[in-house]
Length: 177
Image (cartoon, rainbow, N blue to C red; front, side, top):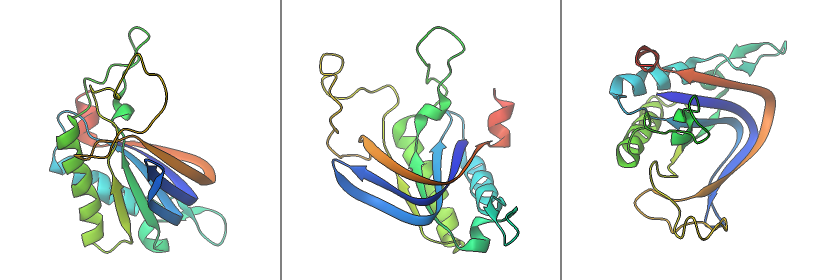
């Protein structure tokens, strides 16, 4: 499992021009499930993110965690984090999990932290590994596809709270590279 974390003063996710989720003073988590990820990876990643000390204390040092500051989080399913660009000029996404299974793991991730009462968690699914927008490649306009079955195109608005962006891989994910 792979995640990219960004501290935000504000973040929102919109689908088809409508805001689906929004938070203030929290954490935006882009989350990708790898083809072989399991509930063990979900548990490790959720616990790691909640306990990671990436929020500043009164001295300006990164000493506080999500649970310490009662931060809100938006978790955005983002299979492209598994894009492999080592060969050729087009990323390969063969290591990303299929969209339906990835959506289940993303929900498990959000549910695990919600159950532990670490703040308001919202999970948003989007994009489809191996699938294209309607009309592609002839229609290159960036129009949102209809929402359905957890697959849609969305816009993520980020007001970064710091320049720090943190990337994480679950330990079992690193073993399979």
